Length: 293
Ligand SMILES: Nc1ncnc2c1ncn2[C@@H]1O[C@H](COP(=O)(O)OP(=O)(O)O)[C@@H](O)[C@H]1O
Ligand SMILES: [Mg+2]
Image (tube, rainbow, N blue to C red; front, side):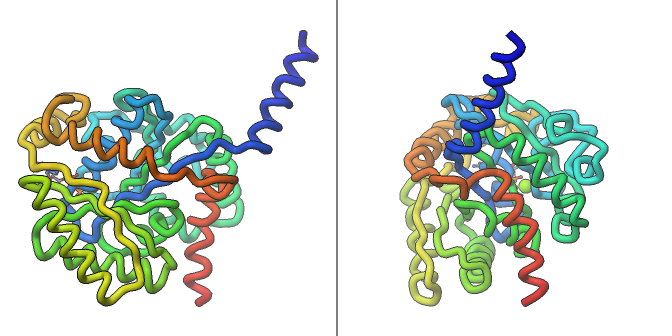
């Protein structure tokens, strides 16, 4: 009995090593703050979970309206406690709606770049233990083009850039794409138009942005859809709920569902490159290379 349990464990462990589960790693960014990154991250995460995916949402934005605030979650510990060995990753993860798993934001996020070798190993090991249970990792990044934001985006397989129809949003999105492509070798971006008044406006916005990038940058933009301006979303935020959870039939919720279906069609990263362990390694190493350069 005990023997077979042991060999079951070994077989399971071996399977994980030999056939890693394909996984999506998606960073949500924007350049400008207040355009809806957190809402996009949270609502896409919950939509994917409702479709049966195991979703991990990493809050890498230290802004005011954090993921935990938006979802009314109680958090006592965060990544900084994992880094100093006080807690395991499992212990800091909180459950959100539809069983999404949330890693709360912390000042530890910006310290990612300067970890001691022991802390680095601790973090890499912590994430690799989670790998088997996750289909999608979504990262809500901060506004701006700080090293932290840039590192998270370049370590991810896919980057969603949230824009809305305002000159500052478009210029900041352009600046973000420019930095990512010129200095961080990222050349593909998924554009999501938020707070659009209709589908036409969303696509127009995408056209405007791609006209500029086509002219000056060597990048490929793809449009993943628009989310309408929706009072129900604001109401959900006031009640610390996600709109797809609180008002599943509202216009923005239906849009999030459509976009989730689009994302499902993206090819999943094959082999091991998409796994959490390698993601964390890329994240930690990206800064070392930058400093050396
Ligand atoms: N589609 C939308 N319709 C209406 N209001 C929105 C929409 N998206 C975002 N908002 C409003 O903008 C605010 C900021 O959104 P948030 O997701 O926190 O942005 P960010 O994370 O980019 O700073 C929200 O609290 C909400 O009031
Ligand atoms: Mg935010």
